[in-house]
Image 1 (cartoon, rainbow, N blue to C red):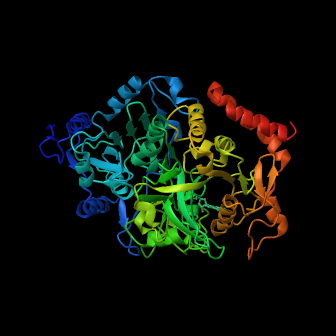
Image 2 (cartoon, rainbow, N blue to C red; image 1 turned 120 degrees about the vertical axis):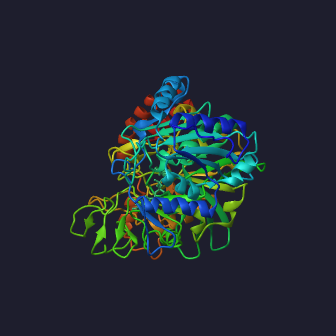
Length: 603
Ligand code: GTP
Ligand code: SPV
Ligand code: MN
C-alpha cells in the first residue's frame, strides 16, 4: 500500500482539518482521496459513477433523477445502534444508549482500520444553515460512499464556498462515516455495500460524530440528525437556544396576516406534509420554510426566530400523491432527485403506494423483482424516501434564505395516536405546552428499525435525537420560557391527525384539511375563535372549527375533537411511568402539571 499525500493536493490550509484528513486516510487506507468542491460537474461525475456501478438507475421520466435500492437490511435509522458517548454516563440520560467514549473510540478505531480499502475517501466540507450566519455551523463529513456524497450535496451546502469561509481556523464538527465494506483487489462490488455491524455515535462534549456500517439516511448523512439535532441540541442547551425536530411554515390569512408556525411530529408522522400543505379553506395560503429541522433563537425583539439548517428534503415517499401532497409531487417532478427503495415503472419513472389511486399494472419493486397489483407485497419500502433540493418546492417562502429566520407565533406538537388525543388542544401557557411536548406519545413507524405501531413517549418528537439527558432537556425548555417575555413566546398546541373510529378509519381527513386546524390556531392567537376549557387544555368550541364544505358528519367531528376523561385517566399511569423513567431530573414544574391534570380528571 502506498501512502496517499492528502496535504499537497488539498484545497485548504486549515491545519486541524488537514491533520484529521491525513490521520483518517492513514487509518482507513482508501485508494484515493477526493475533496468535494460543490460543483455541478463533480456532482454529475459521481452520479455517472453510481450509474456505471449499478447503484443508480437513471429515470427516463424525471429530469436528472435517479432510482436506487439499498441493501434490504439497511433501510432506516438504527436507534438501538445509536450512542451518546458523554464521559459521564449520567449525561446521556435514561433515553439514550451510552458507551464509555474511550472504549467506543477504541472499538471504532479498529472497525475503521482499513475499512475504505479499495474505495475512494471523500471529504465533504459542509455548512448547516446559512453560510453568512453570525457563527456558521460548519462540518466536514468524511465518507467512502458516493451515494452519501450525492445526497449531502442536496441536503446541505457543500464544497469550496464552505472551505473558503472556514479559512484556517474555523471550528467544525468532524463527522466520519464508513460503510465498512473494504474491497480486496479484484473483488466485485455490490450495488449497496454496507456492514451488519452498525454504530451511529455522537461525542457531544467534543462535538464529534462517527458512523459505521450503514449507508442510509439519518445513519449516514451526518449533517442531518447526528449534527443538526443530536450535536446541535447540546450546543443549544449550552448557548440558550433550541435545536428541534420541527417543520417551519408561513401561513397567510385571507386578510393578508402572516404567521409563522413550527411543528414537531415524530418521524413519518406528517411534518413534510404539513410544511407543504395546500389548505382547502378558501383564501388561506401555506408556504414552506423547512420540513424536518428548526433551529430557534431569541431575536433582539424578544421573539423566537426559526431557521431551517437544511438545503434539501429527505421525505417519506409512500403516501405522497397528487391528492395528499401535490407540492411534494411538483418538487420531485422538477428534477435533481434521488429516490431510494421505491418501485420503478416500466417506462423509467418511479411509483410508490399512495402516489396514485390505481397502481400500474407492472413494476420493478424495491427488491428489483417483478411486481403486479396481485403480488400481495408492497412495491416500495414503507420508509422509502425522495431526496430533493428544497428549491424545487414550488411554495418555498422567500424568507427561506434569510439568515435571521422567521419569528414563530405557534408551536404544534403532534403524534400518531388512534385514541385519546383530540384533533387539537391549546395549552394554557409555555409550561403547560412544555408538559404536552414532554409527554408526547406516538405509535412507532418504519422510519426506524424495530416494531411498528407501538405507542411510546416521544418527547417533542426528539426521543431519538436528544443529545443529552432528557430531564435536562425538559428543564432547558422550561428555562427558555422563563427567560422570555410571555407575550412574545409562541403559543403551544397539541394536534393528532391520526385518531380512529371503531372501524379503524381516520376520524379526520387530514392533509389539506389540516389547514382548518391551522386557521383555528391563528384565530386563537388573534383571540377570535372560541374554545372550551377541558382538563387537558382548550379544545375547539362547537362551531369554532371551520368545516365548511367538508364532508364530515357532526358525530365524526365531535369524536375527533372529544376529550374522553376515561381515556385520559388511563393515560395518567403511562405518563407517570415515563417521568419515573426520566427520574429525579424530571423538572418539578412538570410533575406539578401532572398533579394538576390528575386532579382535573378527578383522580
Ligand atoms: P420524517 O421525514 O420521517 O421526519 O417524517 P415526516 O414527519 O415529515 O412525515 P411525512 O409528512 O412524510 O408523513 C409520513 C406519512 O404520514 C406519510 O405516509 C403521509 O402520507 C402520512 N400523513 C401525513 N399527514 C397525514 C395526515 O394529515 N393524515 C393522515 N392520515 N396521514 C398523514
Ligand atoms: C426521520 O427519521 O426523522 C427522518 C429520516 O427525517 S432520517 O434522515 O433517516 O432520519
Ligand atoms: Mn425527521
